[in-house]
Amino acid sequence: MGKIVDKSPSLMSKKDLKKELAGRGVSAENIPSFINLKKSDLLQILRCYENDDFNKLDAKHKLIFIELVAAGDDGISTLMGLTEEELTEAIAGDIVMFPDKVPEPIPEPEPEPEPEPDEGPKPDNVEITPSSPAWAQYVLAKFEDEEMDGENPRLEGLRRVTELMVGEIIEEDCELVSSPTMENDMRACAKATVTVKCHDTGQVKKFSSLADACRENCQQEFDRFPTAMADTRAKGRCFRTALKLRRVIAAEESGGDISLNESSYGSKNIQTGQVTAITIQSDRLKVSIPKLLAMLKLPSDPCALTRDQALVVIKNLNSMTTGVPKGLERGD
Image 1 (cartoon, rainbow, N blue to C red):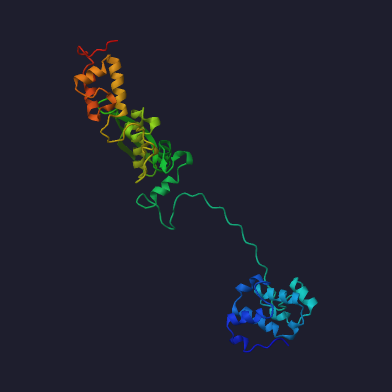
Image 2: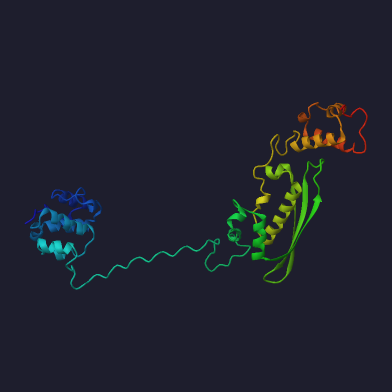
């Protein structure tokens, strides 16, 4: 007979059961899964040690027997009367542990279906409309990667998606409202109009928008083309309006790395564009800048001028297109 415990195993705590089994050589050291066994499993193993048939097994087969319990084998009781040879065969799977209950084969897991392309959030049974919070994400999901600059759609993408979701673009037009001049710091303003024939109603709609561009709000690689940038931005805004995109700006509207080398927007210092304008105009008119600055009682160094002082110089140069006052001509 096996060792008799001081009290009934069913009344013992989980800690006491583990302690009792440890005294019989059963612990997490030789059975790794022993540490995770439930109290009912520990109780079943302890009762095995109180069974004469179980105690006839050698140490190796006892550990194998316990591993079956640790693996959750509900047929452990059917092994109690088996010989060592029969136990080995049972462990190898040659003996059906439940003659009246053959376990059903475990079906192989079906392969997970490939995820469908993400077309933006689509709540179940809820139609996404321009008033839906998910509308912007739904529309942006229609853009190709090359049509996006980060999170901002490019003009060509806005044009394509407008024709895809809204209607055929019948006409694009742009009017230059304000040309870049020295007086306005080379700022251009354009008004664009896009005419679309809607897919659903056949109605013809016009979308108009204004946009400006100058050195202070353009990326450095485009700051020399304010008129073209104003045109592109105005058209982009028309397409955004047609697509009813809110809180989304086109890539061309984003300032990015704004070209401000010697001053920042809103600064009182002379702008780089003003320095360029003064140099070009004075060269064309052959006006001596030091003499002009002296006449206007301004600092002799053009780069030391304020923004407002530079405007005064530019206005004076523009007034000399019909003739340069005596004393301001260059000596060369």
